[in-house]
Length: 599
Ligand SMILES: Nc1ncnc2c1ncn2[C@@H]1O[C@H](COP(=O)(O)OP(=O)(O)O)[C@@H](O)[C@H]1O
Ligand SMILES: C=C(OP(=O)(O)O)C(=O)O
Ligand SMILES: [K+]
Ligand SMILES: [Mg+2]
Image 1 (cartoon, rainbow, N blue to C red):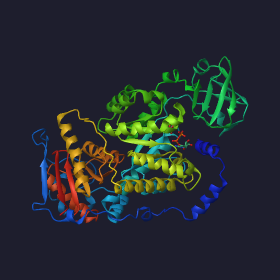
Image 2 (spheres, helix red, strand yellow):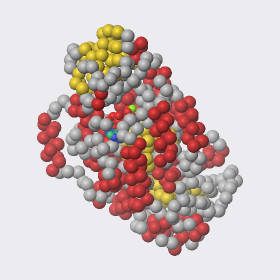
Image 3 (tube, protein in one colour):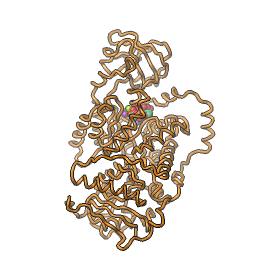
Image 4 (cartoon, protein in one colour):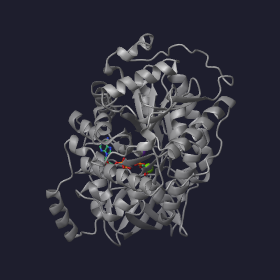
């Protein structure tokens, strides 16, 4: 598949020579690339000395919320997968090896060097493509902060994607990372054909091109474009505007002859294979027919089967129109993989998805603000408010949200971002989105690692600035629990986050089987990081998409006392916490909350 985006962005560049020269000069001051250089050099923000004084003995104050409300069915030891210390040895775990906890070297080094407070809260998603797909390159991305690897099924073969998934899995197993894999479906949209194999075609001002639903033998006749959607010639009208890739090239429909639609180019540019097509009438997107295309195409179903069999962690569903399609896909997946869960991320990128936003987000396990296609469907000036609305709604409904597309678009070609791009990244961080995503920047750009470094350093800086300014910007979080037991968890998490801020604790520890309680804590966006301990490797990977969570895998029991002692022992042995650190500890089995100093 030819590198569409690079040409796209070349077209976009307005040939700024000065910028290019500056970029070259900046290259000499190149961004850090060695693993230790990646680590932010911020000062340790320890709690004020008064909080470090030993608490009255016993050093722990426990508020047990609800033994009565929902007694945990088993207070015994939880099963877990993998090679960690067996649950059976949990009580004697204080003497077992520190290898019993799964944590990656980057988190460990960050905690050791900078303490709790300076860990990054905003998560980073990288699209994997030809620019970074070897084992070394993927490892460099993980070291640089990639939390989720995204595979865009618009491109590449199953064989290619399988290789990448296996490399990520191997990296996780061998180096302790918890990089999750997200498969992104192609979805059905109206798009051009593949240009008969050509990498691109130039459309000049005033030229007449034919868009046709006819099948042609290659080579295609001159200035002819295939369209994938049979209803195309019927639906367009003379006078309509035809936008390629959301406006990279523009045509006006001048004549319809059976299956052929003659168009005059009035915004010249490069046509790229399979580019998206939208048509506009009186300044508005025409979407009646587009809305009749199935959200999940037959190719998507094959890709979804592939994703299930490869055990991906997330499926991002393109061009979602309603909650039904998410529910339908959920039951399809549930019937096919009983033990492993796959979280569904609804891509909000169409007019319909904006219309049915709340229902779609409620049905999904998360959402993506897919600004690329969204900007081709609604006026560009409406994209920022749509982003803010989606981010806030996701937080209210406790669903992770990813802000995607063009965050650092210029870095596809340049080693340094524009000031405007840095401001865009900052805005998404300030909105407290769970995650930021790289597309072409990491998939086919010249500087994948540097683009990731920019996301990481900007996130860290903005988050720190916000904490220092004490801008909590409290949000009214609606009650979302559907059962009494969930309600207790929700109240505990809301209180724990508030206490964490008021007492200025160093971290919240949460022992969670399903990850639910960890995500409820994340929703509150507390000042301190949240250490989430789970016995499942797949839950650990999924939690890696959520704001502020540092997920560890650890076998633990229903005995909080021994869990905590063991956790403290393991983390202390590796220098990740110290005696005197103040933590709040929660357990979803016990629905308990405790405040304590690390012994
Ligand atoms: N698996 C892949 N194989 C080849 N090229 C890829 C792959 N994934 C992404 N790319 C390239 O990176 C570009 C940007 O990625 P993305 O934004 O995800 O796709 P798109 O441009 O199709 O929306 C793509 O246009 C394509 O050129
Ligand atoms: C993320 C997006 O989807 P894709 O890159 O698959 O078009 C988008 O449109 O912004
Ligand atoms: K896609
Ligand atoms: Mg899209």
